[in-house]
Image (cartoon, rainbow, N blue to C red; front, side):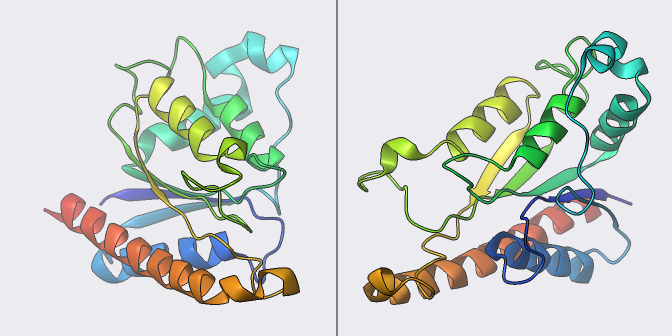
Length: 203
């Protein structure tokens, strides 16, 4: 029985693009892999404490860090909702990363997370794709790709619903068709990715 670790970090429970797409992923995972297990953490509703000196000193022996690290190590696949806030990830997601990555315990190419598929839903209100005016302001994919692959050795894949503010900002009205297309693609990609992973673990 494969285990999916699902993390959401959007501050809004309703109307969140990242939550909508992660929900589509989980729905497809459950449909294709009914025997699978889903472990869920809502980092916005139940935020973790910031890393402190005693937690750093304790490492994997620290109760919370040990629990989080075990949860991650036990996951066959990981799903992360990571909306862009102020050009970066939510502080609640950063707190989870700081707590769960323990040098000497699970960090490195031979650690327990190495090779684990991680799907990141990186939603954003505008577009920061290569060639766009704000390309240099993209610190969500750049950061998460480096920390998840470089420190944990995970296999990372991104789903990027963008232009999510087009429907609410008059100055972005002409971008609504592109926003709708991006949303539709993200939902389809999430369902297909979950289906493929479920099939992989059910084989």
